[in-house]
Amino acid sequence: MDRTGAVAALRQAVAAAGQSIDGSAWCVALSGGPDSLALAAVAADLRPTTALIVDHRLQAGSDTVAETAHRHALALGCVAAHVLSVDVGRAGGPEAAARQARYGALEAARDGAPVLLGHTLDDQAETVLLGLGRGSGARSIAGMRAHDPPWHRPLLGVRRTLTHAVCNELGLTPWQDPHNSDRRFTRVRLRHEVLPLLEDVLGGGVAEALARTATALREDTETLDALAGEALAGARTEAGLDTARLAPLPDALRRRVIRAWLLDGGACDLTDIQIRGVDRLVTAWRGQGGVAVGSGLRKQRLFAARRNGVLTMHTEPV
Image 1 (cartoon, one colour):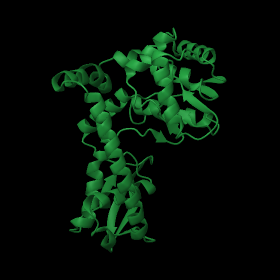
Image 2 (tube, rainbow, N blue to C red):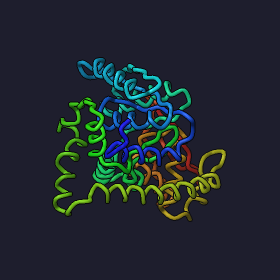
Image 3 (cartoon, rainbow, N blue to C red):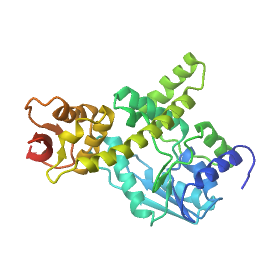
Image 4 (cartoon, rainbow, N blue to C red):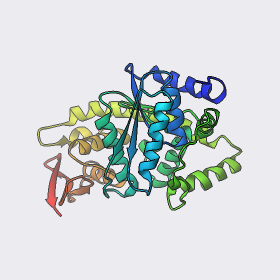
C-alpha cells in the first residue's frame, strides 16, 4: 500500500489508537463511504481485518452499495468481508432505529473481536453541537468515546478531509450517502450550514475546539461517574435508595447516582428534566407523587417515588 501523504498520516493515527485496542485482529464497520473505506484500507495494513457491512435496506439499491463495499474490502486486503442485512424498526425514530439495528448486527457478527468505527473529528464536533442544542448536560456534550470496548473510534482526532484524501490517493470511489446531503436532517444542516458559519465568524478552528471540549468533559464525566458508583453502593438498601445518604451529596454527584440507579432499574432515554424531578424527591420533599421516567417496557410506565425515606421504582400499566 502507498504509505506517503494522506495514507501515511491516517495509518499513523490508526496505529497510535491501536495501542489501546486489544486483540491480534479486528473488524471494521464498513458502510462504503469515504471515512469507513479509508479506515478499512489502513486497518487491513496493520492487523488481520474483517469488514462488517450492514445493509439497512432503507434505500433503493442498498444491496448494490453493500456488494461494492464487499469488493472494496477484499481488494484492500481484508481477510474477510460479510454483508449483514437487517430489519430496521421504528422505535425512537428512523435514525435511532437504524443505529440500534446496526449495532445489534455488528455485535452478533464480530465474533469477540474489537470493532473499529469511522467517526471523525468532524462527527465529534457535530455531536457536541447537537448536545448543546438539546441542553442535555455534560454527558451529551462530552461526545463519543475513542475507546468504549468493543467499539473503537481511531479517527476521532482526524478531519474528514483526510479520509477523502486517502480515498483519492488510493484511487477509491466511495459511496456518497444521499442522506448526508439531505437538509431535512439536523446533523446535515449542522455540517453544511452551522459549522461553516461558526468557522467563518470565529476565525477557524471551531471543529477542533469542540472536539477538545468533548475530551475535557469526557474526562470530568468519567471521574464523576466513578465517584457516583461508590456513592450508589453506599446508598443502596433492599428497598431502593436511602435518601438520608443521598441528600448530603453535591448536586452533580447525587444526580449521577440517581441516573445510574434508574438505568439499573430498567429506565432508558432519560432526560435531564426526569432526573431532576427524581432529585427533588430527595432535596425538596413535600409529599409529592412519583416521577415518570423513560423505559423500554411495553404497555407499562416506570415511576420513581419516595416511601419512608427511600427512593423506590414501580411500574403502572399505560
